[in-house]
Amino acid sequence: MGAVSPNGVGNVAFGDAILAGKSGVRRITQFDPSEIPVQIAGEVPAFDELAWVEKRERKHVSRVLPLALAAATEALQTAGIEPISMPLAEKQRFGVILGSGGGSQEFTEEQYRLFFHQQYKSMSLFCVPTGVMGTLSSELSVRFGLRGASHVVTTGCTSSTDAFGYSLRQIRSGRLDMVLSGGADAPIALGIVKGFILMKILTDSWNAQPERGSRPFSVNRDGFVLAEGAWMFVLEEYEHARRRGAHIY
Image 1 (cartoon, rainbow, N blue to C red):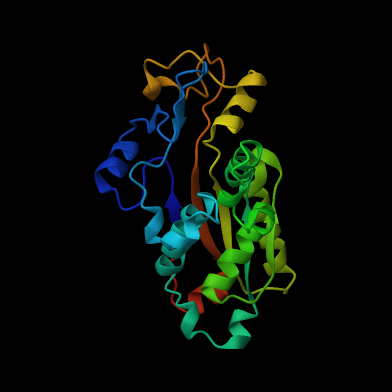
Image 2: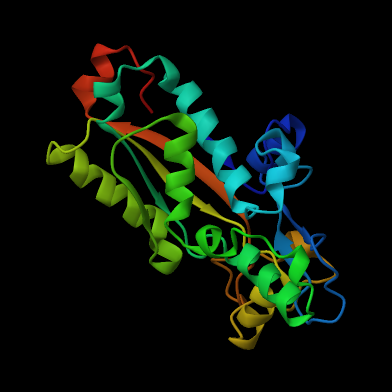
């Protein structure tokens, strides 16, 4: 299993804080939120995107890709898998099935901003392929050399759970032996946040106390908090995992 959530990656102190029940919600830093009524979100703090994608590549991909790559790398390492050393036949039986509510929506928003400000030379030549939802699983398949099914399930808030169910069926039906599965989203951008505000489904009561914003079971809950992150598992049939000595959660 690998996870990049509002507790960060490799940020042990902050991760311990989350486990201790302390919130990772804070004032938005990825853009200036002072002109909108909701100014808080769950951001991954101090996340080094350039540890996962090259600097020259960053303008051509969404933040969701380095988040997904970080979680996927941790998941493969925890599962004791080195794709580069796997024979081709095994790679062909190893799929990538992810869930994402918005995929590279943050990237697409930036391309439209550049377009409407007539900053055409600053636009990415990958504005179409990166903006396509299915590119996310393809990026992981290519980077890890996996040759099995590569799909993205997008069903709103249940996307990653549905991806898990779809992965399970792929294994049960005998189509795949192993699946890198989970979810990734990076929706902290002005236009996306504003869209959720217009739907009146985000809480606007906790700008002064961001850590109190996420209150899913509180009697006075008045909306949810938008957040970014990624989490991944390697799924496989039980006996298959036992034979290779995998750590089983």
